[in-house]
View (cartoon, rainbow, N blue to C red):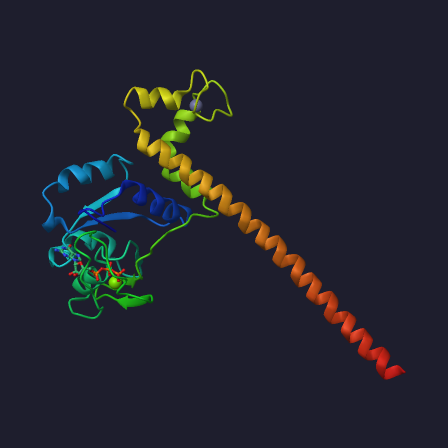
Length: 242
Ligand SMILES: Nc1nc2c(ncn2[C@@H]2O[C@H](COP(=O)(O)OP(=O)(O)OP(=O)(O)O)[C@@H](O)[C@H]2O)c(=O)[nH]1
Ligand SMILES: [Mg+2]
Ligand SMILES: [Zn+2]
């Protein structure tokens, strides 16, 4: 979920998409606070341009019409997780879908259009339709790790373009005959999207490496503990024998 006011951010939507695609869940981008802005159509088009196959809905979380708009996804035995920054309207939408005031909501800080982290734990809520929704606390920062597939899936257009670069290991910076830079020059690919792709890929590489290092460290630590424990047992046995 992303609000259409000053907090609207395509880079952030791509970041969440990488995570959702990695988990192989169906993504629905819900653009909220349609009642507060005049440029819903333009912003919806910007999001749809990220991927023509993407589900994009523009709603007012306080309006019952959201029930109808989101009905195609509120099927029985479906789990829906509401994700997004603080203040986008996750709890307000939960209440509208539930038809009552169950989740506490909080006013946003007007100047920055940001929320105040009203929800502090996850809540699993049953809808009449038989679907389950999970209201989550708004995230300050969503760092990516272990989402290589999710990034590829989110940026398939760039992956496809790079197949046409002259060099197989093209970094799309200064190499000649780079299909990605060519697409940017022709206006077929936005510079913003390309820069965000590079940023997320680097962040993922960095965080994934450190995660692997941590796992390796965990492994060697547990081996060390096991060794020390069995040595202690042996020492005890020797003590008893003496
Ligand atoms: N006008 C309007 N206000 C909305 C809409 N969605 C949410 N709000 C208001 O925005 C504020 C924040 O909404 P919440 O539902 O608490 O936001 P949240 O995403 O749950 O925030 P956290 O729990 O902090 O993560 C509340 O004052 C809501 O009434 C909307 O579509 N239109
Ligand atoms: Mg909330
Ligand atoms: Zn290239």
